[in-house]
Figure (cartoon, rainbow, N blue to C red):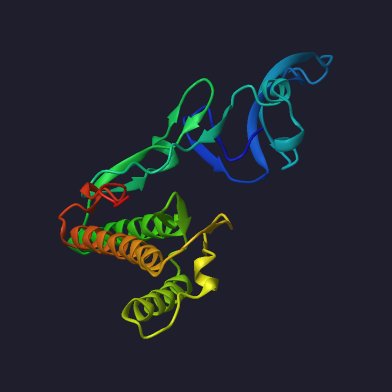
Length: 252
């Protein structure tokens, strides 16, 4: 028998078993009893009498008995495995698991039931705070996912990590100095190309090409971070944070 399970006794009482444990059931047995007589010299007469006896079964019955064994050994019991549909979620309400006596019992399972009670003011505040935290985390996760995809430029994607943006900033500074005449030439190490996320190069034959790449990555990064901030501000001020769609409005 699958556990947890509920035993329903003939009188309607119920018992919940989370793990194998001993249990009792009443069964009808036939025994031979002498018939009482006022004549002490009369021969003894035995008759079959049906009695109800309570038998205690060991914990091993839960794992060893088949369905046929349950029917034969404890025909007066109803035994059902437990199914828990989970806590219902309704705004402003708290789900309370009802006692086993209130669970629904059908021909196959015992289904856990829940009641709903109004939240206390403290719980309402706590629930709202938890909803905002959850939404902010979802926004952060989507931001990080998009940043990990990299910035698109020249048909390739480039890392937006702190290190990459610092390196691009150095390259853009070099390009600016070349364009101003402060440096004699655009370094060949930059002209060969910037390495993309897929480990291929995007050639940067001129300083302007280098500045364009650095600008594209910087703008992609800042636009993504600022949109995340806008979404989080909306989530933190909305009466219902769930109305904020963490997947909407992101820059390409």
